Image 1 (cartoon, rainbow, N blue to C red):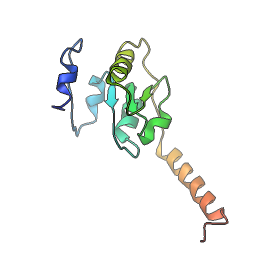
Image 2: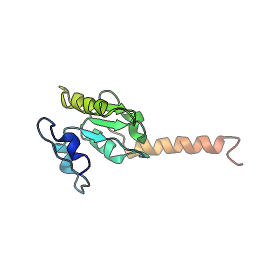
Image 3: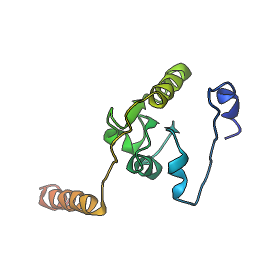
Image 4: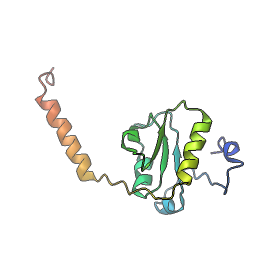
Amino acid sequence: PAELEPLFASWRGGYRLLGWREDNDYFSEVDVLLHPALAEPYGMVIAEAMAARVPVVISDVCGAAEQVTAEAGAVLPLDAPLGNWLGAVAAQLDRTVQPLAFIRGWDVVAREYVQIYHHQVSSPHSSQ
């Protein structure tokens, strides 16, 4: 977080960079989740934020990017200019409607894995 502090020095309304947290109640204090990851297979914190109705601004390399709708936040190319990232965060802060809660329960995940498994075992090339 120390490297990011200069970027937010003049941010209106102040800011707080949380860093690593153990508790689950902190999303009630979060206005927007900024997650410009260089490499993120999924990004559980993104799903957690969306489940708590917190808008997200994430990079397109995050595995969760395909699940971020315009209503949930914004997905930007990792190499987008800093101004684009700041503009996307500002747009989320200026929202008048809170995003709908993102719900993707374990039952949904389990069904997806069953479908993948069935596809793999039924493929003619799966035994090679």
